[in-house]
Amino acid sequence: MSYLLALDAGTGSIRAVIFDLSGRQIAVGQAEWKHLSVENVPGSMEFDLNTNWQLACQCIRQALKNAGLSGADIQSVACCSMREGIVLYNANGDAIWACANVDSRASHEVAELKEIHDWQFEAEVYSVSGQTLALSAMPRLLWLAHHRPDIYRDTATITMISDWLASRLSGWLAVDPSNAGTTGMLDLFTRDWRPDLLDMAGLRPDLLSPVKETGSLLGEVTHLAAQECGLREGTPVVMGGGDVQLGSLGLGVVRAGQTAVLGGTFWQQVVNLPQVRTDPEMNIRVNPHVIPGMVQAESISFFTGLTMRWFRDAFCAEEKLIADRMGIDAYTLLEEMAGRVPAGSWGVMPIFSDAMHFKQWYHAAPSFINLSIDPEKCNKATLFRALEENAAIVSACNLAQISRFSGVQFASLVFAGGGAKGALWSQILSDVTGLPVRVPEVKEATALGCAIAAGVGAGLYDDMAATGERLVRWSREFTPNPEYRELYDTMMLKWQKVYAEQLGLVDSGLTTSLWQAPGLTTGA
Image (cartoon, rainbow, N blue to C red; front, side, top):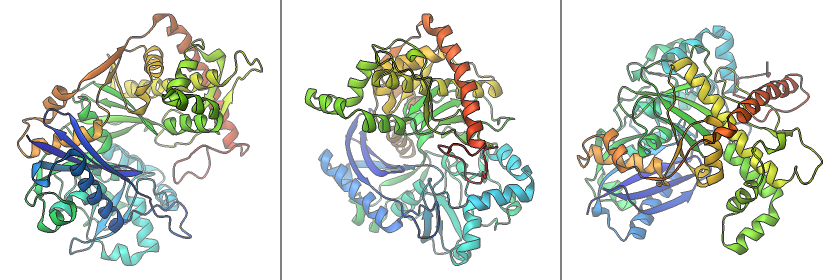
């Protein structure tokens, strides 16, 4: 039998996942990694290149062992990663510095670029790349030029973290559009670099690696890499990509107009656009898809999964003990309790993530609004349901923003990730959006998409989009309850007005924002 290996570098861990050609997951090797905070550099999160490569090799060997396979059984490998994380190399091709996607050291440089160019530069960057400055690579490169000129001077080229993994395996450097697009330096329309943007930012425009599409052959596993990780020397190494875009491939979300909500620590609402365009109001991020010629509108709900974990750990110790004795997940028990609460959660409104406003993005202080002192109505079950309803409301607001600028009318949603494990949450998402919601069987959509790319590059599959559609399997489908349509529409309008008032408290300095984008000095 033939097997494919996906090497998936997330924010918190690295995983090696083995699939057979039918898309069935065979084995996983996983290790957590930590990003390094540099002393006296606020917001810094550097990526430990040496340690993390050793962990990647450890995961590959672990996955092979768990599957009872040898390196010779793997027919092809591809790599995917968190987006925004960058790696710099010297003229010899040696990696000399890297940072994770969560690195926010360059807040001053973001503000400086906005001030110097009076917002026009950021508008130009967004119109070309679909990105704003806050999460892009250019402010980080400027920070290095200002504070670590030795690194900046020695830098010959730049890639993303997935490309670094592929280079360690094959010895070749290149970037793919879906991940490199998040640097803010890649043109959505041509799917190639725009050196003039670096020049406008006062950076050297000669730092750019070759661009190769996802699913194209990069090289082969070298003798040294084979010794380190246990794969066979000569195994094809194929271009991978960004985690969300490869996750969409693994979910079969590959045609224009298709829509998915990816429910993890952050929730992403992604929509495949029928043509390349950006949002005139700069509210929504736009990224290259791994499907050549296609782009995705992407909105983000902040800390959705993290908020649920906080609520569980802070307030539900008793439910965790009961769930442990019953042999079930604590979230399952909490959903059962929340299922007995009426739709609307007695009017309780959580204030956590705002809808996405990419140009000037910040959040209100975390809170619950409109609580009562009636213990029959205001209790843990009610608050848990209110959080699930609020996550769906924020998703619906974000999808409405995408629909307004793109003209896409949604027929259904794919709901995947940790949030989709809950039947109640899936039903609430359907009720709030008014759309049918399909939940896939696959638990590792990003890794599956990466494996599909590996198979295409090795000639084991003919086409990425068709293979993604063929391999996806569905476990459940939820249809909206028309009785709740008016209720949730009213709730959404009220929540938007209340959230705007809560942002006013942040603006006046009375409360503290949950999060604000690097470079924003005030809420206003």
